[in-house]
Length: 172
Image (cartoon, rainbow, N blue to C red; front, side):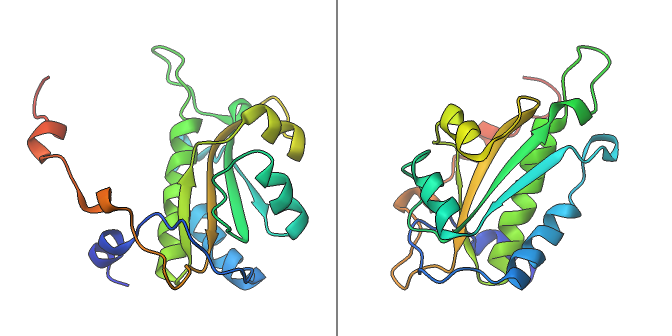
């Protein structure tokens, strides 16, 4: 799909058909995330793929924002493998994981899979449910699947602040 069309048409899907994604479809989406740039190419992302009824039921105990999706990917980052900015020690891994998640969302949409980025989850429950170690930071949850027939963007999807409010040149 042409990139401009892809980014214009993609929206957060909150209503899914029940059929699971095939291993091939999941692999294609993950391949796009694998190509994402990361700080000094350290590749600190860790993606937990949830694609079974059991794992999705566990996920439902961690968030109310599953939206009936049959698949999810929890995009995390390993803080022990992150590039560190030398001036203040800031880690790049959270930004890296977000870039990876964006690649996953766009790749999914490109092949007809809808997704929604979810931050509304209980991190303590998520760690417990999926045995996530302490050095792995939870990033964003992408719930995904084939959009339901009635799926549509929220009313505010097409509302944008004027660019003059969000883009600055030279200084604040």
